Image (tube, rainbow, N blue to C red):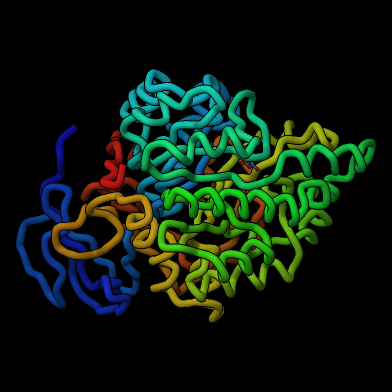
Length: 440
Ligand code: DOR
């Protein structure tokens, strides 16, 4: 693949690392940003006229489920990475509940090889914890960290007793990311609601208390061993309030756009498409999560992109699988929220890129500054367009946000200095790179 050595982005509204914006130019050479200035003039190199567009660091989505290997009828690394490019997502961290599960170095290597062949954006893969693979968890490389499912079950990918969890927290130092839902409580409530086929009860079975119990246990263990802990998709007011009281420097948390913007009312309009784990909550939870994000209790945003086919989602609850796609809509959803005054554009860029790079120790990413990788997205904050099913690139072919009128759609996405997405089209010839994690 030829490397386009130089690219000049002109007249963009550029977000600087201090969160301020200037109108100016960015020079990219050999994959890196080399200069940011009010005016750069170099004749004879490829130029983008970005007049009226806003230049942000490319989104790093720290929680996605891309289904390859084993579940490619829902999504694969090529379709998912094209959807990323369209959504301004230049790097992703993918979860281990594929088939086979990513619980060995061999399975991790297999994913990395597939990604090198298929992904148009950059990639990293978690190693999944079982009750038996501690040696793999200690040595797997490269990986952003260990993923523990504390509640919802993907075969052996479940660690649900305090003793088994403690064995993992006690050894090694690498980041542990938890899906925090308490399995015992969920099992008990499942019995209480047996025979009801309305997907709405999903939020009552896997209730706020189930999430709080697991988050409290994970934080307790992290504190005991001062272990780097990341709490995935925080969903409840109770967890946010708990973290507000007790969030040491080694703990971070994320929230999804859907837990900020959708609540249990969504079951009335989109039915089982609203079903996910952890479930959607109440409007009050939405508000408390927003406040926690704005106050820094929640550190970053992930989509939990979890595609299932329309046919799978059309089954009767509880046969319907949990999860919804997200990488194509997350940035416009959050930028629309910024435009509505809920937060600033600079905060969105921090939550979706800068803070993620810092939290996972991803070197050289998350800022528009000389020396950083040229992973960038140019967005249009002046026009509104609806989410249209026919335009989606995710293989599952639907979005819970269909019909929502959003602004901040990516116009151009750049990965490693190369234009991978422009005005509706992905350059499918390009390939991203494996991410490096300095903390691991
Ligand atoms: O809703 C969800 N779906 N939550 C998860 O944690 C897993 C995901 C999936 O893989 O379908």
